Image (cartoon, rainbow, N blue to C red; front, side, top):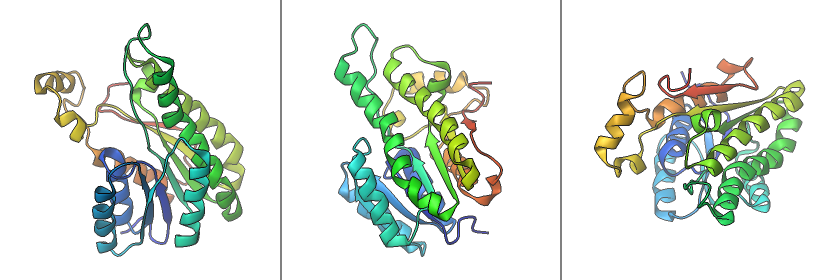
Amino acid sequence: MKLLDGKSAIVTGGTRGIGRGIVKTFAEHGANVAFTYMSSEEKAKALTEELEALGVKALPMRSDAADYASAEKLVAATNEAFGTVDIVVNNAGITRDGLLMRMTEEQWDIVVNTNMKSVFNLTKAVQRTMLKARSGSIINLTSVVGVKGNGGQANYAASKAGIIGFTKSVALELGSRSIRSNAIAPGFIETEMTAALNQDTVQGWRDAIPLKRGGTPDDVANMALFLASDLSAYVTGQVLHVDGGMVT
């Protein structure tokens, strides 16, 4: 059963890690997918070919999530290619970690703009399309760090906590038009980035998780699929944790 047949989605930061997992899962369930990337055109091309082999349309776009004009162009291009936008996944994010006493204003600004302002940009840009359709699902990627904080990540934690407040406010504003807004808070997700870390350290993180393993991009993608589909038609304003029990 394909849960997203006939639907169209935008996923930011779609060529690696969690974003790539979401893009592929959506396509496997019948959605046409526009996805953004910043650097690797080669990865974007390879992913496009994978999606088209599944029998859906794909639209790769180099786009800066922190720039509002880029978000408007992304929505316009997706509407032109697919006819509408049913689902938005605000996934693009970066880190610039460091203790507050050493953190520069630039490190603060780039993380807040890329992680939090980007969510405002795309949600505002797509709002008109969803209001006209009187339906839509907005899915924002936050983090367990946005819920409980983390030393050395004041900028990242603040940006992810801000996403939670934004998600809940949008749910209240747009609910009367059947537009849903939810957030996913991943915990320790193992990607190509964590594969490069010291494995003893990584194992220590796994051991501290109640389920005794790190998550996978598919674990997060499956939650995004639920929120994107009609299975979650009565779910809005929620923060759903995909963290193996890290936050209870």
